[in-house]
Image 1 (tube, rainbow, N blue to C red):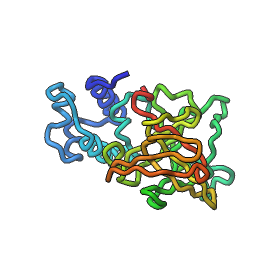
Image 2: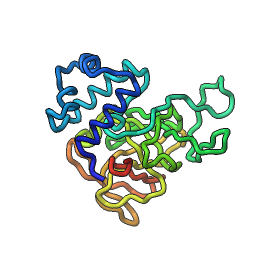
Image 3: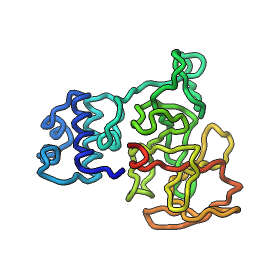
Image 4: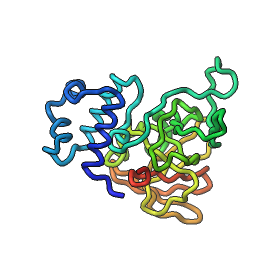
Length: 240
């Protein structure tokens, strides 16, 4: 499914209705002068990525929670923000697991885990803690899936595709293909803090894989013996 300008207008209006946002107020907070209004009125055909980032940053001031550019472009259920703890609720240790979350009613939780990420690691990578920082509402198309999770981009080596602050959703059960964007989890000790690589998969061989970054353009090989797991990055067409 292709995401059209009208899809994006519908998502923006739904977000504004949910959060009680007015066009002029949102524009002023984002430092804009008519850009959002013209797009909503159909006087302009598109808004660029930088504009959506500014709108997401401004929305945070009103919503009191992280707002992603995907949320502003894809109609979805309201976001629920909360910390999830295992064991003692007074403990500051929040454990990551990849198992389906079950509510007291026996139904799977319709929320998406967002894991902690921070700069660090080799080859333009970053570190991901096995910590569920918060949850956000799942886009409609993946509402029933329990094999997906998300993280925020903290590096700029893929900036033409993923910018720092963007939320990226990955899936665990669908094997990536060559040319897919992937999240590569590297082996490490302790396992609670994993080096990660967000890259484009060029080739996948038995002994090594070849990855590419976008900024600056570069390809490099990674020994499969050093890899714990490879996740496929979900595109916007996978989510609606």
